[in-house]
Length: 135
Image (cartoon, rainbow, N blue to C red; front, side, top):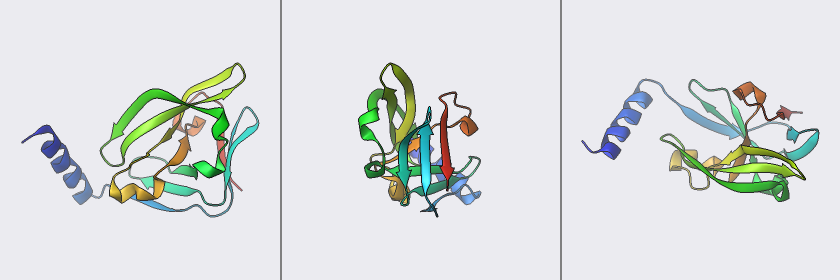
């Protein structure tokens, strides 16, 4: 079995065993802040629930302060979502490297988060000082 075929077989087995990824519209207004500044605020955010992970709120780019986000060279791959690109948050001399990620071309099952942004929070173990709340 090729590596891709082996990975697909593993993913298919995990799905059969109950591994799930679900997305839904996040009710209310979601706000992401960093050092007291609003980085994203949206009533159109999407929450992604994935087995064995805390829920993650994804923000439309049009509701984020993209002028404060600088794409980095860092990328990762998730077999359940696809390839993620990363951004640093930059404000003057302050910088939070790879604190934001986005699936620009996710697998079809995760199309709802295409071009949306997620933020590493302290709940995920990050030390960036990013806070995401739903109001």
